[in-house]
Structure formats: structure tokens, C-alpha cells
Image 1 (cartoon, one colour):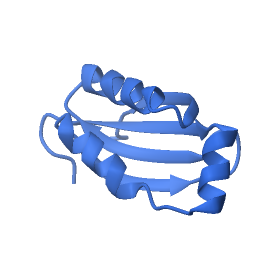
Image 2 (image 1 turned 135 degrees about the vertical axis):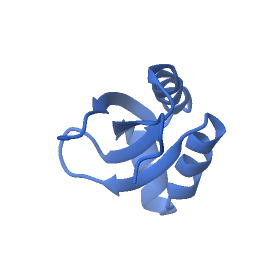
Image 3 (image 1 turned 120 degrees about the horizontal axis):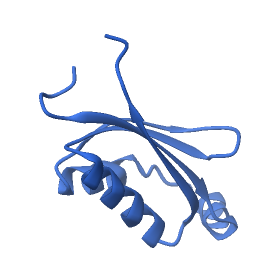
Amino acid sequence: QKEVGMALYMFEAAFTSDAWATLAKNPQDRTEAVRTLLQGIGGKLISYYFAFGDYDVVVLAELPDNGAAAATAIAVAAGGAIRAVKTTPLLSAQ
């Protein structure tokens, strides 16, 4: 259930080839790192998945607003392991 005042976002991210090489040598579950990042800006991790296609990771998160979503995308991109990030605000069918 979504918290009052929170919006739902989907983040899609593509790793750099160096990030994939690092993960191949030392597989890691980055879920807790993502959870911590989101909590630091007042958000909540809903789910974290690896994916096939143009993006390697899909994250669903609740965040207070578009500013927090932009801050999340910037923080992820600044880490150096991501070559592309896409942020999509999600709206419920209701």
C-alpha cells in the first residue's frame, strides 16, 4: 500500500561494461544499497529486479515528489557504474 503523499516511480538503469565485469567477478545484491539511498531522501524501495533488454535493472520506489526522483537519478548516475538511467512517474489505474 502506497503511503499518503508519496508518488510511485519506476527507475530503469543500464550498467557500464566495467560494472558488469565487476559483478561477474564478485556478484552482489545491490538491493540494500538502493534501499538506503531511497530512505536517505525520504523514499521507500518497493522492488528491485534485474531485467533483459535496454536496461539491466528496474526499481520501483515511492518518493515524496519529482525533486526526490530527480535526486535519486542524479545520485545513481554519479556513482559511475550506470551508463543510462530512465525515470518514469507511475499513476494508478484508480
